[in-house]
Image 1 (cartoon, each protein chain N blue to C red):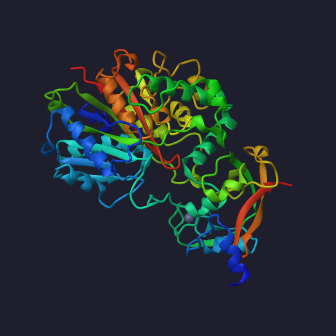
Image 2 (image 1 turned 135 degrees about the horizontal axis):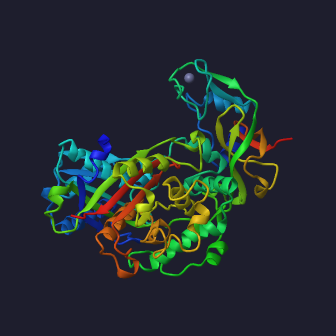
Image 3 (image 1 turned 180 degrees about the horizontal axis):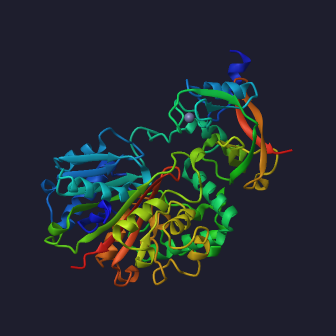
Length: 143
Length: 388
Ligand SMILES: [Zn+2]
């Protein structure tokens, strides 16, 4: 068994599930880049990943590097973990972050205490390698 | 008159049932549906063979294909109109609109709307539950379930409008007071604002006493044309207004976390009925969490957006107050049957048949909200006591 496999197996939290639609998103994160689909026909960004632009139904969607800058739309401190694998982490922050490009992601704001994360706070993307094969998009207070 | 308004008052509810709300490990979900059906037929004075339309809501736990057909066949019903609704907590409210339309279209004459669930004891093969959708984008971050979804709503509402924990508490306390007047409610102990404040945090800003109670139970109601309804044994409860609206499907695509689809769905219902919020004698607002009620009070036009917090204070939403809300105890203190009990309570209030202590005096008109999914599914229903 390779070291990589054993590390992935001991990580008990849900991992990103790559499919045909989402693989470019997760692969970009693994390369420590944030890419979001952008419609070539109407310029809208879309997230979560889509097969068709929800605005104009175009299939011409280009994975586009974005700034990673955003603002907290809503912030919650989890004290009672909704899944057993997160029990050891409480209290932890969960947040909705609105990216400057106009899409919103589910995430954790790290690098400060959960209670310090407040609505409209400026944040920036950080890439957390949770296993050798999987990277999550998290945010920290903007510097 | 709009096409929608022309339907106002043409259809009525003639039978209603409520199962005990609690924990019933010995019952099956399908069996609860059939029992709710039997009791609604009994209440209406109808036989199973009188029903030719049936609407149910795909259960979240232990879902099965063609669920409505399973209920129909287990209940001895051979429908000419049948549909499965899968829109979570708005379904029991939405059913009334579907029933009305099916009869209006000539597809059937007598429609059973039924919903039951085993939210407390569950059953069936382990962990068979309808997937939320987009789970893979939030579960890696420790995000799952309705509590965090509504905690996001509360976070934003408190930030934008200064809504306080004590105002959330006023919603939970009112629900508890009403539950204590309802023999069919799970919660039997009083709650104070201090108890609410001291309850343990779950997903802050929400604490335990902001959350609804997982429960087993169910209910049903039967819809027919008003002319036929007037020949039945109960006072008809008339469908005056219905509405439905969806703005987003997941929180990433929600244009607002504080103004939801209920704003438009309630406008549709009030316009159809030719009524306004001030005309209502009570409201049954879907209350999966305390914040949901505050948002609905605003979206339904009982106060301006952002003023829901102050609105719920000082007993205004308690029985005897300006707008009694969730007179049965709601999901917060009666138990979570996904809003079916909000509809059945509205019907029974308008029939003037609930226990005297929680009967809204001379109740003539009431509004019911349905709310579900990721703040995403909304249906509205305005009912009235038949005045003829
Ligand atoms: Zn487009």
